[in-house]
Length: 190
Ligand SMILES: CC(C)(COP(=O)(O)OP(=O)(O)OC[C@H]1O[C@@H](n2cnc3c(N)ncnc32)[C@H](O)[C@@H]1OP(=O)(O)O)[C@@H](O)C(=O)NCCC(=O)NCCS
Image 1 (cartoon, rainbow, N blue to C red):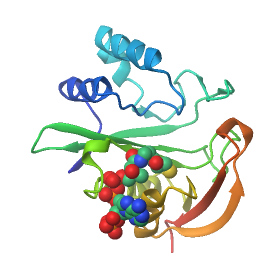
Image 2 (image 1 turned 90 degrees about the vertical axis):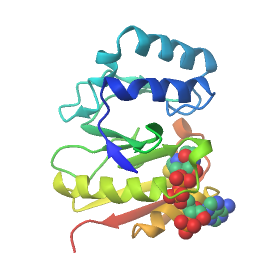
Image 3 (image 1 turned 180 degrees about the vertical axis):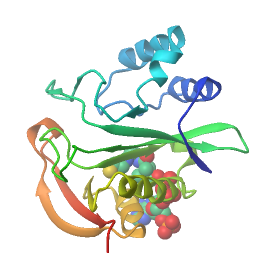
Image 4 (image 1 turned 45 degrees about the vertical axis):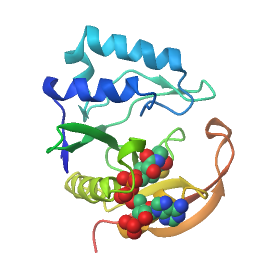
């Protein structure tokens, strides 16, 4: 497995994953919006690939499930790739604000990830988190926060395997559905 910054040769495998009914778009994205996304990528794959490195937060704002507008912050997005099957397996993103470990209200954690259901429990997310932590350290972050629902046992395990320390359990803001979540901290500088 590898963490890659995708190029045109990787895009078809990602589109095939979207066509199987899975997506890594914001929670609550409708089937119609996923279909529109597929069309958009097929029409202009180069533009789609443009913002995987967005150090200057040039990406357009996007909508949260409750329609709150979320503005872009510096981010790096990578794909989890099976180099043997030549197959897309998942996405991981790092986002932060320059010169601070604070996050804006619309972002609960520095890192988000998901793995396609048909490749889960094979170690992909654990590997990807380990790799993106190295990237976060290179960006100068002394630690990162990760937030996961208290029921998300798989994600909790992934975070703990990568050194996550439980900081608090809290109620998510309404824009994220108000459920209970754990906040973990992973130290990058010891
Ligand atoms: C969370 C997610 C990314 C994990 O991806 P993954 O590639 O399957 O994760 P890994 O294979 O690296 O590790 C999963 C771990 O959880 C464990 N696990 C699986 N089901 C579990 C359960 N019900 N209870 C406890 N642990 C469980 C696995 O055994 C494995 O641990 P191990 O390596 O010690 O055996 C994936 O389930 C996913 O995409 N979920 C939907 C999106 C999501 O929740 N993202 C995280 C938001 S914070």
